[in-house]
Length: 362
Image (cartoon, rainbow, N blue to C red; front, side, top):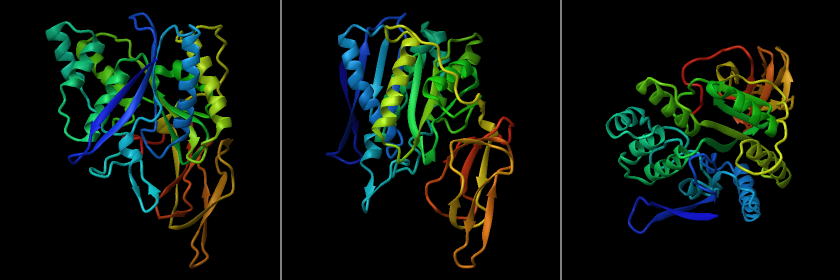
């Protein structure tokens, strides 16, 4: 194992941020290479626990000669967000200086990469990394995005591990990788696998795929676009050794099938449900502010017209039901029970496209 210490400049003299990446296995053009990171939204910690466990396990497997490919692992990838605390509360989703979501606004470098390929005879991967390296970097957020994206662009498979508010395990991916996403969903037993051509906002995994897709269009030939997904490890409160142990075993079995680990591959289990379009997510909206009271547990398939709960106006006593409009898998809901009018409080994965445009929240 090689441990690399990454240093990001702070915003004022005398300040810096640090984080570590861990690199396992042999380098080589034919060796499959997977990149995993957790904690990009720094207040989402189930993945941090999981990748901490996975690092310890990979150290043993590498010593036993079980690494056939490469693994780059960043268990806690966002020291900037980890340091953001006010009055005893951690705020890890948005960078305070800019207000930007840590998991949005990754750069489109595809045009510059195409120019590099034409002028310098670089491979697509080399060209993308060269284009990324040429971007200006001024703030810690710029350096963080560059460092993480550079490691991801070197890989054949990218797993960005997050969690939701209260949720069943689910995945976000690209239609281009439907089979690969279904296979991973089977190992992880993800309740929902949400696929699209482009999610909007250039989130980390989508930015990897979109840069390769756009480069493919510029050069006019088919490219081997890396498999990149967001893995949502349940909810923020699910920092649990039992979940982490199960997910660790699932990822190790998946790594064997990918040829990254030596071992006897097993057939991928079937996921609980087939992939559905990200455009097909039904967002159940609170019609007015108040207290949301849930009456059905998430993590189950529901028919249209199911009553998820209601919103209570505690001043008037008025209650308004929250009913679904489509059949689908109830995969997530907001954890906060005090809500404002128009809040999206629950999410159903349906097979019917319902939305277009930007498909991710802020």
